[in-house]
Length: 339
Image (tube, rainbow, N blue to C red; front, side, top):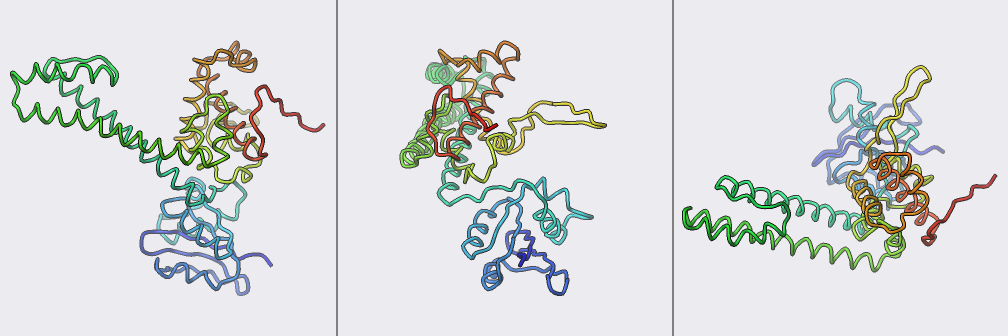
């Protein structure tokens, strides 16, 4: 018997569900309060439940899977294509119900441990952004008083004591003390970032998948932990090419009348992991003594940025192959498909 398909539009307090009764053909669309959501599905037969991959979706997906239901998390862009008329909860639930029945790639349901690692990455990323903004703010404020410093955090630390000492003779003490406090805050942020990296390092030592892909050139602590946590189950992807396409590391296409034109990379999927892979590829190209014959050949005929993205694409495929097939990294390994 085919499972009943249910579309769920989750929200903060009230969830909208939509399904069609298999026996009567009745279209059911109703609201369920947050506290009663799990109880509604507790005694039902196995259902295929579709939800948009938004805040809280991973939690509800895990709970519904524990009850025996099948859950698919859909990207918002996929659901948007099926929204008819004005956008509201009823239309969204109906669109999710329609989209979940279409072929396509869904978002992986992650474990709580994987989500915890991604949470550490998000908090670290936010601290790095704050540190950069704080440094730029100090430079901009001091430039207004004729003090221009060289680029880089090290140059800022070297110049700040003498700059504050010189300005203290002609500026109010309240401003000098505030600038000194904001400069000292950068050290606090450095400590917080280092502590998050230490915790990621501990998790990586306990995870065999992270330790395995760490052998890939260009893959470090951040890339390894983010890749394993973001991917979820590697076997949910059919191939390394599908994983690379999911990360937006393949060319976008446009075409009409049978003529297809390739554009730049699609930039779909997880921006954070794609950025880490591209940075890792750039490090390999810039610092590796022997980048390999594949890189040397493509470097002769393509621009540097294209080579960087191509290497990032290859790194993503290698990560998938190692995790999906439980293989160790082998330099120069060539995949041989059966004839």
